[in-house]
Length: 145
Image 1: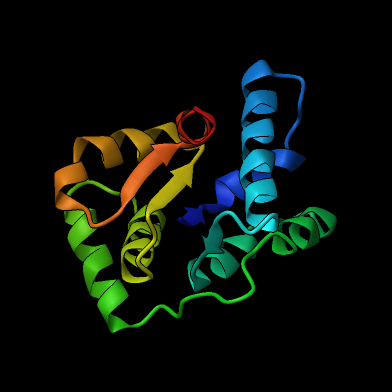
Image 2: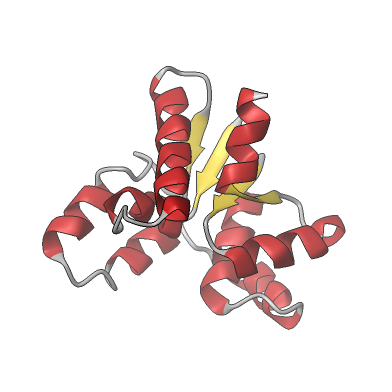
């Protein structure tokens, strides 16, 4: 399976773990990354990830998140940008639209997120998308179930 983890997922292990939800999502992200390390799934991504990394002010955290990125990232070409504009018309925020468009272009099976708004919109518009959008907890439950 080709899994596209958005940057909020890759950030989760470095968030404050005092909240139950954050700890649960961290464990879920780690389970996905472990499965990728074992060769069970492929981690895919796009240059949008590098763009979002620039917003992380903490240099150490940015380095740690960068280490989790897939080795090869899809370039953001005109086709991705056109599709992202279409998705923005459907209500996706700009960065989310680029992630969805890139995940579609790279033929990911699923785009996994900790962003509730993105997960809800992805589910609501599932028939209009060429990639499934799932929240990290539900996705890992499926993988383990």
